[in-house]
Length: 107
Image 1 (cartoon, rainbow, N blue to C red):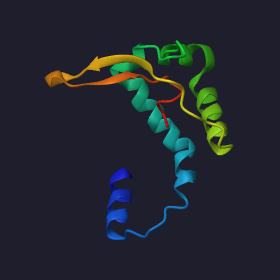
Image 2: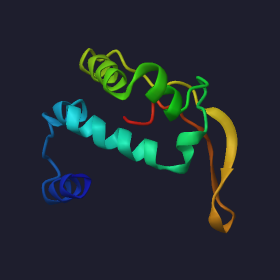
Image 3: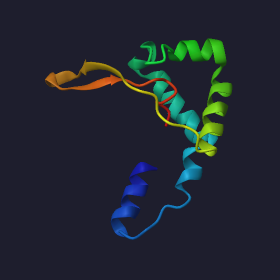
């Protein structure tokens, strides 16, 4: 989807993506995002809120969690939480700062 949107934007610089918001809070989009978050190495690391993917799966449940995320997105009441400050090393000597919370990652 991202590649398709990029091509459309490059082809028509004045194009508006008015319905993109509906795509963001679509249950299928949120599920794909969750699967990506849960499948990466960072899933085992707690975010700034102290929660891990495993905690959300066992204590809240993924369907309930994603429903809450969706409702907050639809109500435009979602905002990202602070990042836990720590440089995370990457191959080749580069890195990026911090861990986001599981709540912030699917978006």
